[in-house]
Amino acid sequence: MQVAQIISGKGQEIYSISPDSAVSDLVAELSAHRVGALLVRDAAGTLVGIVSERDVVRGLATDASLVQASVESIMTKDVVSVRPDFEVSDLTGLMTEKRIRHVPVIDDQGTLVGLVSIGDVVKVRMDELETERAALVDYITQGG
Ligand code: AMP
Image (cartoon, rainbow, N blue to C red; front, top):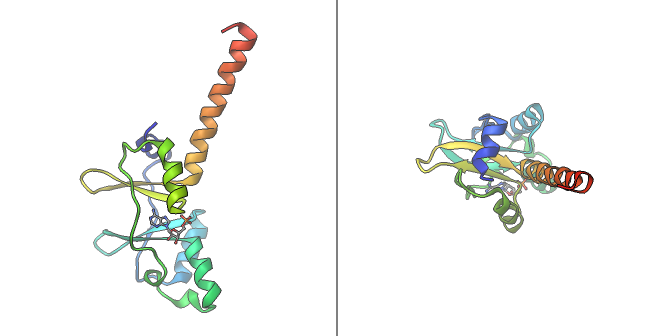
């Protein structure tokens, strides 16, 4: 399965925030949308970074007044992304190797088409395992 299939299954909603926004706004958005990361896009819509709840936690560990700081000051600028034809089975390795749980999907034209989270990847794997289990039960009880 390719990541394009995950994107079409969960819709095109991509939550993002401006680099100039305050961390307090970021926390409110993460909570409102019940997500763990937001893409950071400038006024022109260009992807300039990614910011996750982990950045907030790490920042707070050294600066209790972090909520007043800008998103830009805590985001990761070097964004790891994949193309829509990237295999979902390869995403687990990429996320583990890079220690990230969110990966934007960008097509050949450079258009942002979605964001895949580790939760999406786990769901695909669970569905595959359930399909395999059901097929095995069929095989055992009905002789294939
Ligand atoms: P996460 O595990 O996704 O919550 O993020 C862990 C760290 O990796 C945070 O510092 C994020 O800003 C960063 N991060 C998350 N996703 C990406 C990504 N696709 N590319 C680069 N950095 C990322």
